[in-house]
Amino acid sequence: MMSNSMEFHLSLYRKMVMIRQFEERVKYLFLEGIMPGTIHQYQGQEAIAVGVCEHLADEDVITSTHRPHGHAIAKGLSVESMMHELFGKSTGCCAGKGGSMHIGDMAHGMAPAIAIVGGGAPIATGMALAFTMRKQPQVAVAFMGDGAVNEGAVHEAMNMGAIWSLPIVYVVENNRYSASTPIAQTTKVANLADRAAAYGMPGVTVDGNDVLAVYEAAGEAIHRARTGGGPTMLEALTYRITGHSRRDPCLYQPEEERKAALTQEPIVRFTEFLLSQGHTQQALDGVRDEVNAEIERAVQSAMAAPDPAPEEALVGLFV
Image (cartoon, rainbow, N blue to C red):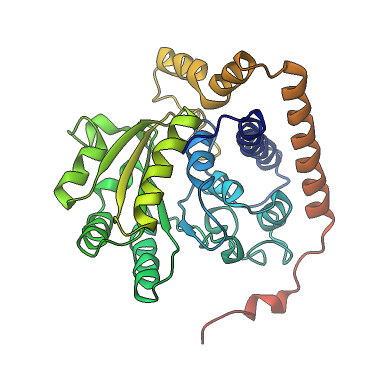
């Protein structure tokens, strides 16, 4: 399952850096009042989206959360189409009508993100059921945060996925906080994946800051789903190094905990690994420069695009 080629490792690095730099650029666009709306960002969790989606084709589908940008980039959406969407332009991936919390593109197998906590799990389960009924080889992946595992809809979805052996993987991104509430105050089990036993499916807990560990665990779970083995609950342990939303100062995170997290975040760790494997800092800096240039082109393109005409608000409605 694991590829050890230098080119493969560099590809993972580029995708993680693309997510990080996209989020950083967007953060300042919002803070400067240039971009409308609100955002929930993904800094610190990049290894999960990249490690999981590396195994998925456009025909496979994912559902996302109110924190969807990383999933979107990892699933193959272009930063240009996403930036246009965040600026509310009709040239965006959802014609400017989805915005940050509802971004997606079914051409790349990403359903528009669902901001309701846990709301993606039953949708992804339904898509997995459709694959089974149509005898299609696709897999569905439902991304969710740690707070979502206490939602009734998630329990029902996982139970249904298990009893029907559906081709789905439930990925729980355990960043330790449900908004500002520590997971230890809402859940007593040591690992959230321990709950999988109650559904009769495998439960796996993995270091979510290690992209190669995520890649390996996700590969096994997705292969199991694709070959008729049913669902897996994959818990990835990570840490959100940004606020819950754009103006959150994270005062609920202890200072020492936050400092420690910054030394263990996925890009720092993977950079150290790449340097130990013979990659040069110059090459990694070159990747970062290329990524920043691509993002800046997307920003300028989105800002120059015309705003949608008022009548476009009536297009695409169910009446």
